[in-house]
Image (cartoon, rainbow, N blue to C red; front, side, top):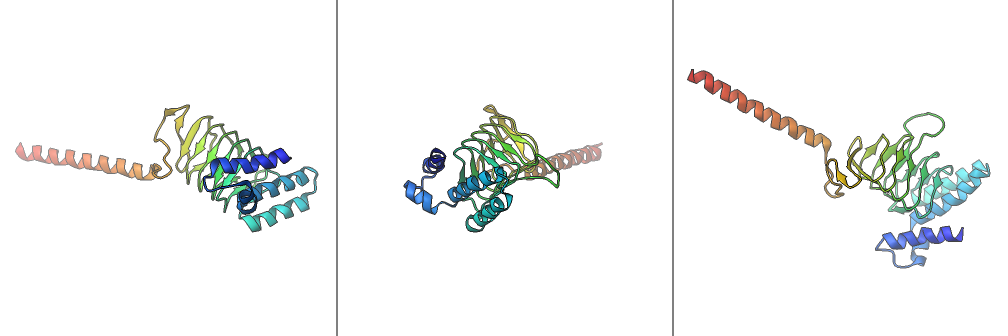
Length: 216
C-alpha cells in the first residue's frame, strides 16, 4: 500500500512540470486526493461495505470534482491532471501508467447490466474532454485526442480523434491526420470542404458546357 501511494505521488512529479515536491503534491493535487479516496472506497466495496464506499466516493467528488465509482478497478501510477469533471464508471478497468485530463468520461451507453464501461490498458493517454462510452477495450500505448467520442474498440498503439472517434495512427503508421492537441482535424469541416470543392468543379464543368453550346 505504501508503495502504491508513493507511485501515485511520483507519477505527478514525473509528468507535471509545475509539481515541485512530494509535500506539495500530497496537499494540493486533487487528482491524487481522488485516487487515494478511491483506493479506500474500492477496498470497502470489495468487502461489500457498499454504503460507506459510496459515501466516501461522493465526499471525494464534492471536494475534488472527480467522480470515481468505488467499483472501478484502477492500476498503478494513474495521473489525473486538472481533473475537474472526470467521471469513471463502476465497471471501468484502468491499467498502469494511464494519464487522464480534465473533463474525461469513462462511461456507459445506457441501462445495460454487467460490464458496461471501458477497459483502458497500460500506458494510455486520454486528452481533455474525451468521452469513452461502452464496454470496449482501449489498447495499450494508445492516445485519445481532446474532445473525441470513442464508441468502438481501439487497437493497441493507436491514436484516435474526432466524433465519432476514428483511428488516425496505428503502430506508427499514419492512417489519417497526426494527433496535434492544438490543431485537431475536424471531420465535419473536412466533409464540407470536399462538397464545396465538388460543387466548384461542377460549376466549372457547367460553364464549359454552356460555352461549347454557344460556339456550336
